[in-house]
Image (cartoon, rainbow, N blue to C red; front, side, top):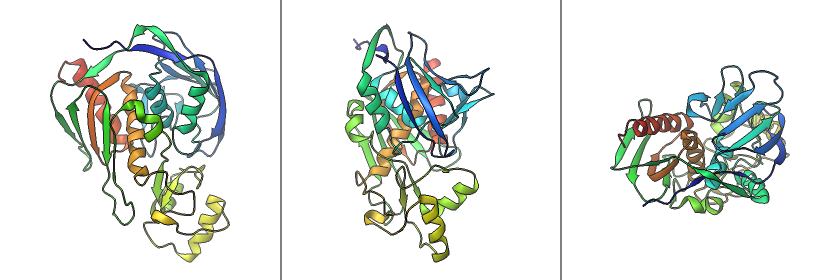
Length: 309
């Protein structure tokens, strides 16, 4: 007999503000408790009509360097860190009022969202949540890359991530979360990251406008040309730019040797939460990305709906 898990919301309203990593714009957020079966819904208060966006797989509109959800007319960007925190707490019903199109990045992890939720606490509701179980192992391969996911039956949600970056750049490419209840201590504070070789391309795509050494780990995967150092100093708003331990620029040290692999677990949890169900099995992810995570989540949901898991 499987233990029932009920829907949850928060005890009282949360107010916060911050800057979007890609937009670079400041936004104000009000996170409001909601009734049963409401779901996780965002409301763009800077727009008067058609301004509600529900956090569902069907509403995912972009997965380039973040997960974006839309209702055809308006969007909310970079939802994954916030959704990962909600999944950890089991929160399935809230209204999020926001006066811009991107959630705050804070320090590049889920830590601040967890701290905010901790302050107000979680409220158990009466209705039960839907869950997804797995009856036999499945491997799901990507059609677009070398990414793949191994799904294995398990009595709880367990997740691991393996990356294949050069060991001289990222010393530790593997991480595992054996128990979702340890998310706050083992995963929540793991920051997003990029390679220094990616920065120019990302800026050319009008991304990471709010990126800094305070909210992103930047790995040095190539030698920096002198003429570009000044540009990087200006971008990151620092006086000096030098290589620190673990091949990263001079921001704070890594929080874990395998912080980047742990962050991939954080992202995957946030993306999978868009199934709107609790997952009860083990997932091994090889080179996960937002695009592949969403494809995986859609396949899992479809297999579940057709009783093929």
